[in-house]
Length: 165
Image 1 (tube, rainbow, N blue to C red):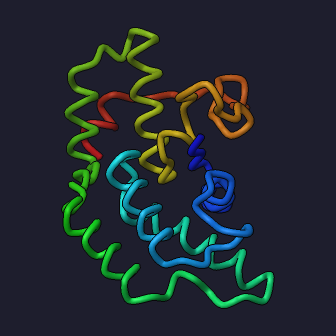
Image 2: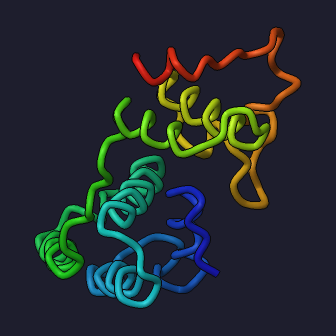
């Protein structure tokens, strides 16, 4: 039921679920219950909930109605959700030292290991996210993923150069 692929679809799903009256939010209580449900039951992070609320705000503004997401009670509910979820643990940045360590443990004469190191270095050098370079999941757009047949010339990895860079 709750499709969070886009903020607009999340807001529209809220309408379909009966969270809103007459197609638009008219009660702060409904909105507070909606965001609480998203956090507690669906496990959605505070920041994602806020994006959904911005989409809901946009729906109201487009129809010339006042925004339902500017109340003090809703803000306090969101602050409580944020406090209860705590801070997200940030991932450590990838450094050249880490890449060298990974490369030193792989056999670069083996095709699979060479492909793995090449992918890691390419993603690092071009600041790619995993979804931009690898096919992860069933709905990935293969046009956006790196593929062997995309290259025009062979990539040559020199282990000694990579270890000293």
